Amino acid sequence: MRCPKCQFDHELQTTECLKCGIVFARYQAALEAASKPPRPIEPGPSDDARLEAASKPLGPTESSLIEPARTYDARQELKYRALALPLALLGARLVMGTGLRMAVSMVTMMLHESGHAITSWLTGRWAVPLLWVTLHGEERSFLVVLALMAALGYGGFRAWVARRWAWVLAAGAVLIVQLLCLTVWRFYAECFIIFFGDGGALVLATILMAMFYADRESALCKSWGLRWGLLAIGALTFMDVFRRWSGPVEDLPFGEMEGVNLSDPSLLTEMYGWSVPLMVDRYLRLATFCLMALAVLYVWGLVSTYREMRSPASRTSTEN
Image (cartoon, rainbow, N blue to C red):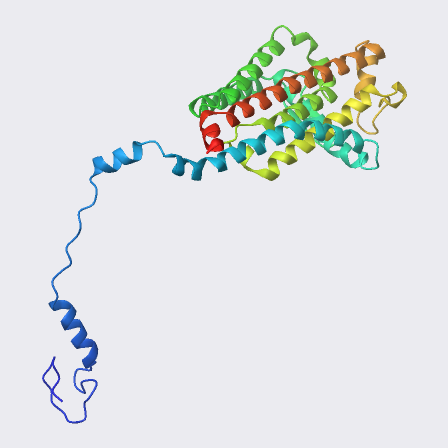
């Protein structure tokens, strides 16, 4: 058989060429495909037509395929915001009556020492929070003051660029508190550092619980474990501190911490002349203020999510 490619002729070659090695059937199919005329390309819609189609509002059928998922998310979020915070505080209160309170006290101590450290930074002193004690400077350092101002300014600027207005307000509020601590309240710096051990734990626990209401598009809200974990830590810490100061006076941690110093209540009463009722009243007032802030945030979270759920797009999808 003669090869159609190299024209080599041999009687033993029947399916492939013994010289160039081509397979006769495949080579013939390739020749036939090359000889066919190309298929004309059908004209598609122009760019203007595609833009016009994309800008047209969705019809009832198309809208019903998209909106139910959004509506379901809004309703689920409304349930979360209605139940999460009250149940977290109630559950934390029940945990305080069990043997798990000792484990919770370890977490509380971390926020307690962080409260000392943050207050020290606001008053211009360096501080390093450890597990049972916070090391801090005795004198104000301008390096600490400038570093904290720079950090707040940079954080506020980045929040402004990202249009995170809540973070912009938070950075501005902390900056105002720092200026007050450096000017009007500078004579009470040491007293503030001591008081805002448990006081700082109350404030930081409130902030952790408030993060549950972060914007739904934020990474914090999208991270399911982080969102609910911070809520649980905040509720447990808040209830641990609140129960301490709302309970019997005999349970308050007066005395000396071995190898450290006098406890915070002992320092406030013996060094700064606070009476026990006055000290308890101030801690409970701070706790009440934190609860009022959470209540305002709770109502705002319900109203904003309900309005989102009842938006015109959601109502249209529900009716369809």
